[in-house]
Structures are given as C-alpha cells and as structure tokens.
Length: 452
Image (cartoon, rainbow, N blue to C red; front, side, top):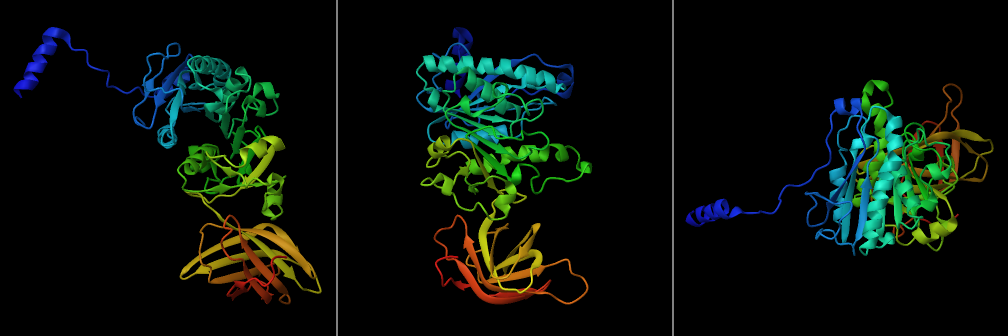
C-alpha cells in the first residue's frame, strides 16, 4: 500500500505518461446520422492473434511506429458493405477472431461506416470508389515498408466486395486474393468489368453467391464462383414478408455465416463444377474431372491444392448445398438406379437412412423423374445428418396417382456412393419391387460390381 501511494505521489509531481490502454472500436452510428447522411471517412483497425479483442487504429501515412503490424506476415483486410442504419456489422468480431487464429495473420478491419451509412444507397455506391482509393493508398504504404502484395487477402461483403475489386484494379491486379461474399447486385448487375469486381482484380478471385435474385450479383465475377443452394433462396430463410427485416436480408447475410463456418472448420463445403444448379441436382456433376488432378474445390479460407488449376481453367461455376441452420453441413450421396419396367413410370423418390434409432430423410423432388425400361438413372441425395454406419435404407416411389391401379417400379440395382468420404463402402441392393406411395426397406450390402 505504501509503495502504491509513493508511486502515485511521484506520478503527480513528476508527471507519468502511461501507455494508452484503450482499444479503438468500429464506428457506431445511429439511424438519425444515417438518415442525414455521412461524409466518407476510412478507419483501419488492426487485430492480431495476440490482440483479437482489441483493435489498434493504424495511421494511413506512417507505418514506422506500428510495432504490432508485422508486414512480413500475411494480411487479411475485411471490408463491410452498405450500412443503412449505421450500426456496426454483427459478424465482424467473430470473423476477426477466426482470421486472427490463422497462422501469422494480421487482420485489418476497414471501417468506412462514415460513407457506407446512408439511407441513400446511391450515395454509398458513389463513396465506394473513394473508399477504395483510400485503401489502395494504404496498401501502397505497406508495400513501401516491405509488404508483398501477393500476401494480401481482401474479404469484401456485398458492396465491400466491389470496393475490394476497385482496390485490386488500382493496384494492377497484383493483390494476392479477393474473396467476395455475395457481391452487391443493385447498380452493378450488367455493368462492365471496370465498374465491378472481376477476375483481373487479383491473382485469385473467389466469390460466393447466396442472394443473386435480390441483393446479390447474378453472374460470375471471379476465377471461381460458388453458388450455395443455387445462389438464390437459402434454406431456413423466411418466405413471407411478414417475417420483417429477416425476409429482406437473410439470404444475403447467409454468405457471411457460411464463410464463418468454413473458417471455423465446423463444416467442409465441397463444391462441384457444373454448368447449372439443375444439372447439379440431377447428379450430372458429381465428380471434379474438369479440375483433375486437383481435388474438388472447397469453399472457405484454404484454397491450396486446387487454386492454380482453377485459375488456369478460366471462370468456373461450382455448386454445393447446405442445411437451414449452422453449421449448415449436408451429407451427400450419388444414387444410381437401374429400372426394369415394360412401361415408363414417372415420379419422385424419397430416401431414408437408418443408423440405430437415428433416421435422416431426403426428398429428391426438384423435378419429376422418368424411369424407363432397363435404364440407368442418376440422382443426388442430400441429407441433413451424416449417419454412419448406415444399417438400413428405406425408399418410397411417389406418383401423382390417386385413383386407379397401383403402379409398381422394379429396381434391378440401386447403389449409394458417399460423396466426400472415399474410405466408406458403397451401399448396394438388388432386385427390389416398389409399389407407388409405399415405403420399402432393405439392408444394404457391399456392391458386387466396381461401378455402373
């Protein structure tokens, strides 16, 4: 106690200059400020693995007195989008923690809330170019102090994805990577590449689409474009306007939450190159032959193994599906059936997998399937749970027939191939008679043929 009082007295008389302990935080505005409009101001907040909870504001002009900013490390810069209410994005803190947990990574949050916060979306779009000029000027300062442009990764959400694209263009496409999370569509759909994100803006550009019919961009923007659930309506998002704000933003925001799950490694989103979502659902694109010898692309942070092949291939579209809730993982099987019927049958198929008392079900009902005599039919079955080992399979053939004779469907062979699980056995069964709208169950056995 005496020593503490002595130190206090010395400080009072000699003048103590303690180190600044406060953390710098993201600009928090209210709706009134957004309604009145804000003038552009860009704030750069640094986080590292040593300080993931405490941001340190970086100077735009002087990097010589920034001991926490190690320019020999990789740098991830997070760029938010349009902020109509002025409130900070709810996802920024979580993303900072996950990015800072990567090996030797600086995380810089680009806070351009003053400029993005405006009830007038047109004004925010106009400010995006100036925000990009500010960011590119800072990156040039980083380069002057020894940073490599190829070690910089820009992660942009919505309007922020196009800001990242403008930054990349200003730096002649030498930025290492740009990740666009559902890039904004309004005022950008249909414009030339110079006025939006495009593959020439970085050495590697990957894009995720989750709301392309409303707030997101419709067409391909990167070296690889991932389309979650087709890129439009996301499972679990409201279908009615009576759900309020969530009805408008849920699909758009899902892009961020999928990226967070991928960062957290709670789910591996393996995607399949395909020309359309319909072809993907039909099971026509369940291998990654166009990218061989590279593995199938996986949406998320780690792109090693397939990035270079994708860049060489040109623009690639890849599709994957998710569940309605976090961690959004789907368990997928390729289903191959050979039917034997004198007459053509039409219908949809419902599959159930059983493991002990656990059961998971999927309806392959995106379109009515045509089953013909001695014809191989391929489908994609996706389940909300990954059950292993599978002890029983139930199958139901559903038609629109309500009255009249009961139609039957004879399956000579049915095979389930687990996707993304090369060490698991293929599941087969032979010669099953299905009566329409009636469930039949069987125990799978190892397949006799190497494939069909």
